[in-house]
Image 1 (cartoon, one colour):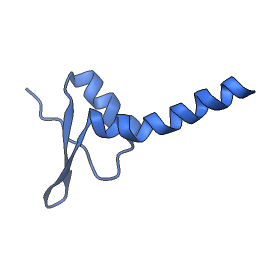
Image 2 (spheres, rainbow, N blue to C red):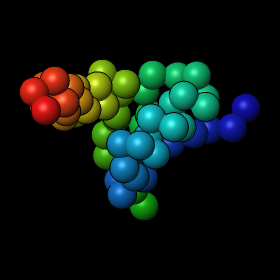
Image 3 (spheres, one colour):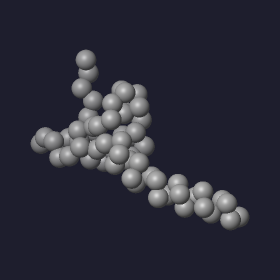
Length: 62
């Protein structure tokens, strides 16, 4: 199996795409020296949910 990891410069979209393609919910983030963190589906949802909620609210009032 291939190991999949994220780079610190990845966007949330890139991480979400890798997770969807690989069928997993977490990605280890590596820089040149080793692991620097983990990003999860929950992290992505927390970042996107407020934006989507504002968009839906604004669309409903237009």
